Amino acid sequence: MILIECSANPEIWAKILHIQPSVREGDDVDVGTPLGWLIRDGFFHPWTDPHMHIELRNRSDPIRATGGYPLEPKISNTYYVDGELDRKEVYGGRVVALGERYALVELQAPFTYLEPFFGLCGLVGDEFGLIDGGIPHYQWAGLLHKKGGGLSSEAKLLNTPIGLVQSSNSWAALLTCEDFNIMLDGLICVGLSCYLNLRRERLVKIILPKGSDLQVGQKVNLKLTIGGAGFTAHLQQAFEGLVENDIYSKSLLKDRRRSIASILTSLNTQA
Image 1: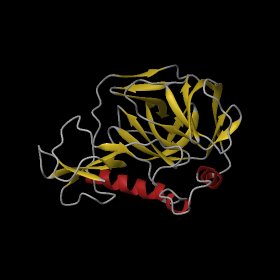
Image 2 (image 1 turned 180 degrees about the vertical axis):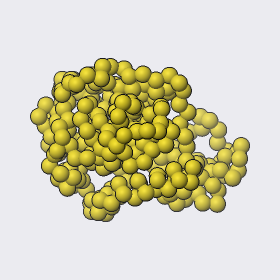
Image 3 (image 1 turned 90 degrees about the horizontal axis):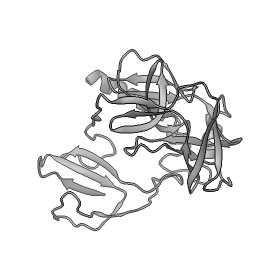
Image 4 (image 1 turned 90 degrees about the vertical axis):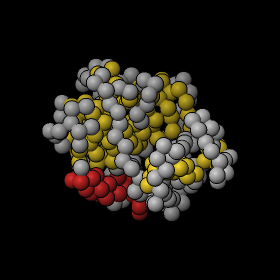
């Protein structure tokens, strides 16, 4: 963990995780200053690439796992769907990279551009937006949208119902995932990881079961089907081979969808 006191406002500290530091206590840092090396620690799943975790916090409470300042994304008035919102059942793609337990697929499907963000297009009622989250294996996701308010309860991805809105504000909605299968050329996959990106890349991360034999460059077809083997089976697949006390173990994950919905509802009430 690295804690950085912000020079513009010493009451605000930045907490940065998942880095082996090359800086020392008391060093002055600026934009572009190397801080260290990305490391892989026990918080990462096999399908998670090394990355930084950054929070802005009050200096009186810099370390806890919760309590960071909420950040609202700067969304412009430029937004559109890149692709046709037709009623296809199967979407073609190509495997562009493989990692431990995942395939990165360039997908020919509707994506949303909501300046400056780009991501896989989701629908809540007639409102489109960007899906962000691991579905259904993390059991929740977010929908970043433009209009806000009046959202219906059902959310769809690639014309398949994937979840229900639990809370929303003027720019985002929290979804709890329903049970569905992610099929890649007949292979039942563990989950689908959706991200907001800034480079307009039509990429999705497919979480694979152990022992899959996909190859880079392989053409694939993605299909979502309602009603899968159940969340228990998804979780057993997802966490096969991981220790029971992993941060996202089955026991911790089971009730997380309720707690997150409760937290966001509380935040909405305070706002």
